Image (cartoon, rainbow, N blue to C red; front, side):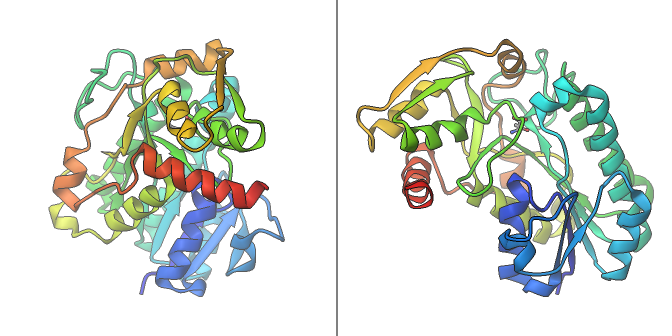
Length: 316
Ligand code: AKB
């Protein structure tokens, strides 16, 4: 049975991943950590929790060692828009946290997962059906962090034999914990506003296509990749994964099937629009399908129906 240490456990992915891992492997097998503790959070209440600033490598190592974990899932990171506003902080946190987590995995002989992102691509990357192996010259600090992280994970595998694995996540959509400081966040906010106000003003322009995925598919992707037969993995780190390539009008049209008078308007934020314009329109997930059987269950309509139903229960 795996014993798993998770950083950034109260963030957008961690809030749901920890609960799912506890369901699969047992509550005490999953040690959640984050920089601060929220006593009423289900992650804190449902199993072991430790306070950890991931830039403190010594504490990270000691916690992982004292809990005798064999797997580290490193999620703590700043997202693209925040990283662009605070580039030095992003470098220190995103890269410093990652190397500390990799070092703990090396010293304790742990399996390792960390997410990369569609942000690891840049304006010179082929925009449509972006291949698994292609040009990666991102123009954002987040992208620079993500490419460096992909390379660093490959290095720890090749040099030290650490069993590092990872995916390039698209925008993740969920009704549990809101994302913070991402470029794809509009695709989450639009559902909240649809329920609360029947209208949304998008900071991303019409016709801007980006890949997205519903959180249950993202959680399954992480668990499937970690459980996959390592001998079959040619890429290991940073598999392209996606469920849909969408733009704001399509999300609005899917919402209107349930809320017919939903209104979408635009007030484009030049910073986040520039980031979105530098990312692919759609990525090719064939390598993930071939090497470890990745599939996504939710398309836009199925996700919209579930999001709206869950948010109605949460907000009304
Ligand atoms: C962001 O928008 O920064 C993230 C991502 C795609 O990595 N959601």
